[in-house]
Amino acid sequence: MRSKWHWLIALDIVAGLAMLGAVYMALIFAPDAANLASENEIKAQHIFYFHMGCNVGAAIGLFTNFIASILFLVTRQRLWDGIAVSAAELGLAFGIGVLASGSIWARPTWNTWWTWDPRLTSAAVTVLIYVAYLMLRGAVEDPGRRARFAAVYGIFGFVSVPITFLSIRLWRTIHPVVFGAANPDARGGFALGPNIRLALMYSMAAFALLAITLLIHRVRLERRREEVEQLQERLTP
Amino acid sequence: MIYLAGGFFVVWAVVFLFVLSLVQRERALEREIAALRALLAEREGDDRE
Image 1 (cartoon, rainbow over the protein chains, first blue to last red):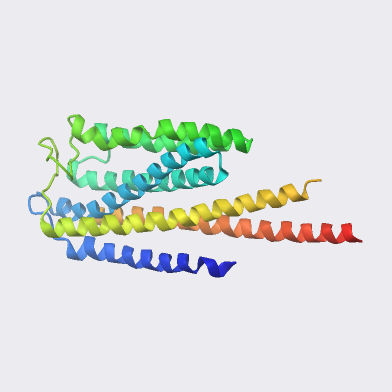
Image 2 (image 1 turned 180 degrees about the vertical axis):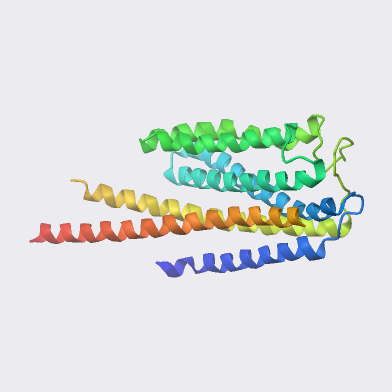
């Protein structure tokens, strides 16, 4: 039984090594940004590589939740509901990482831990939407109804993700735009030189691998839970 | 430097807590599965007698 999971152990090791590589790329390989004012701001800019990595992890989780929710409603297979809840949990964890690392980066850059900027507000709302998703699941006892309600909620809840992504492109905001047009209103924005770009791409890839590995573990846990329910049904006279 | 350390710490803390919660939940489920299987085996033994 356990031998069929050997590939997952190998994936754990690869993801762990990739994350150690991401630490090296963020702290040692990536140069300091040239156009920032204070020493604190220059050092804190290196948080960027993990902040963006968390964004990738959150995007993988929340997009998987969206797709799995649709597939559950189409097929009514429990597998998709298990994947949806696993992905929502993962997306929420990385979403909290995004908010926390962003807030710490904001302190030396914007001189505040938090501001009700469109990007920060939409990101916080997204996190709260998925907190509510997990609370909704906890509040419905019948597994069939729980899966249906959660799938519908997951599909509508996902609307907040593209809004968060586009917020810095659509509205006036102090948050830098990393990909695409530069934001003239950004405070603490910087251009991506070749080494910064390489470190960023590597970090995002490492976080994507970590997110996929954690998602597989979480889905596996959900299958264990189904096994418990099946055994309980067999024991029920 | 303190902000850089803080930023990295929170991200690693989130990942660590997520992994820890997975490990704890998996252990609890393994224990439950073992207990249920033992109960099932016991019940099937009783039925044969």
